[in-house]
Amino acid sequence: MAKIKYYQALTRALREEMSRDERVFLMGEDVGESGGIFAQTRGLYQEFGPSRVRDTPIAENGFVSAAVGAAMTGMRPVVEIGFEDFLTCCMEPLVNQAAKLGYMLGGQVSVPMLLYTFGGGGVNAGPQHSQSLAAWFAHVPGLKVVTPATPADVLGLVKSGIRDNNPVICLLSKKLIGSSGDVDEGEETLVPIGRARIARKGRDVTIVAVGQMLQVALKAAAGLEQQGIDAEIIDPRTISPLDMPAIRASVEKTGRLCIVHEGHAPFGIGAEIIGSIAETSLGALKAPPVRVTPPFAPSPFTPTLEKLYLPSPERVTEAVINLMGVPA
Image 1 (cartoon, rainbow, N blue to C red):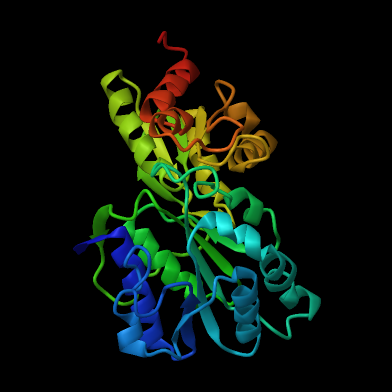
Image 2: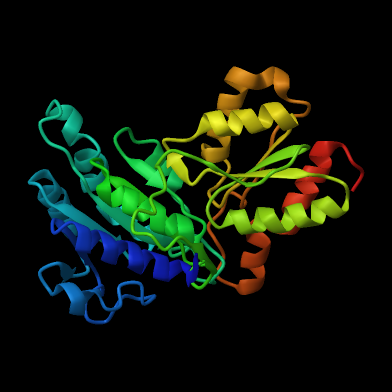
């Protein structure tokens, strides 16, 4: 095992897959000689050259459209969008083309494309650079959506996404860029798309924590343990396809469910999980499920307000205590 940073796991995944398959190429704004806004592509331009590491204009819709075309003709493009918010600039090629072409053409073509981007809050980037849009894309048939929360999952899910024959959107966290974690050193360190991970075993309550909310949930669980509450934490890792069997098994064991995510509560990931549990395992619940999310409003820029806006360990702790019926 080696300890590396979150952004270094992305670099390593790109390097290994570009070395493994000459059809893989990278394109995006500032991914070339400059090495990326977070140093995530440093060294790749020098190693693979300008034909496989391509700087693009500030024209997300245009270069994502080009990537879709390249994927249809046998290449395996990797596309960087600097901030998750700017996925709104390329909804047409992603939602209307990449997600649907295989279906519309009866499987005669595939669109093996990985698009990664950096999103979420916690770095005081304001309402246009702090959004969490996983639920938008998970709603679209044909798109796979992954949300790695650790360096090991960045490495494994990016590599799996590049090898997948479908369009995969990898939503990385800006807040986690400098975080570190243990990663296997072999080149076949793949994480299967669609398989959740039990980040902490427990018996009293299931906490499903999406993306960087995993760290929030783990801190809350440590505090809850001091109060005699043993929380099991599920990291979905993939939002679409969602590993409901893993979540269901945990809820049927604990009887209680708390979901923590950065997206808003209405029509969100938590609503989908609760709906699925209600359809199959309602009788297992000892209390109504709860969601811990930001309020239904744009993210504030001011650091003190953003801290109040985002789910925190304290808010998760309070929600779980209430769920357990323990006086606060």
